[in-house]
Length: 278
Image (cartoon, rainbow, N blue to C red; front, side):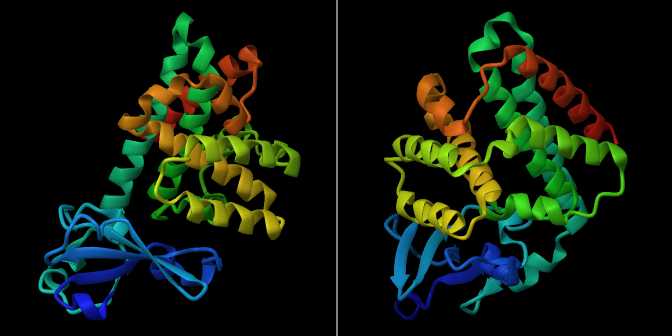
């Protein structure tokens, strides 16, 4: 593919470029298309090379100076645009701004639980808020979140402020990581496959889940399944699926304890504001 498309500006991104030592065997090689003439069939195109999967993603319409996905990219073809533009990034400023945006998203989700009509989706809103807040904390720690690695990334973050440690513990409790058993994961996995059945990369995502299960990484697997579901539901095109209550409840292992959800929602809301303020 690369040899047949020499006029394209290509770069390796994702965990294979950013932190190859932490990549799993199941991780694909994300190839960003940054310039050149392409057709729509190439975007999100997957190629299998032996045991490795290459996925091509179109970034031609992105602002390179604002896109954290392109940070630490490795150029594969000579580029006419990247070398002069990309090094100008202010890493700390870029990551901090992106992190605050995700924390605002978290605050928005958990604030939905303040209305009397929110009870039906309260547990879902709380879990989505927890994922957003964790992503925000990682970004503000200058760590680029990568879904399958996020829980491990969170373990490695050097936290010096007590309120950040407390916030992380609140998020972990809201996610219910302690419930990560094979029985619950297998049940959630079946519901996930139903929710994502029409997505182009369901086979790749399934292979990652199987890898985590086969290697006994149950907490990471539980976290990853929940992350995939919440990321899917956050997209505007999938908003209607927020009402698939039974399927979402199973996939996300949601609690029915509304009093606990209210308590944790209040803590989540408080700490979102605390992190944003500081």
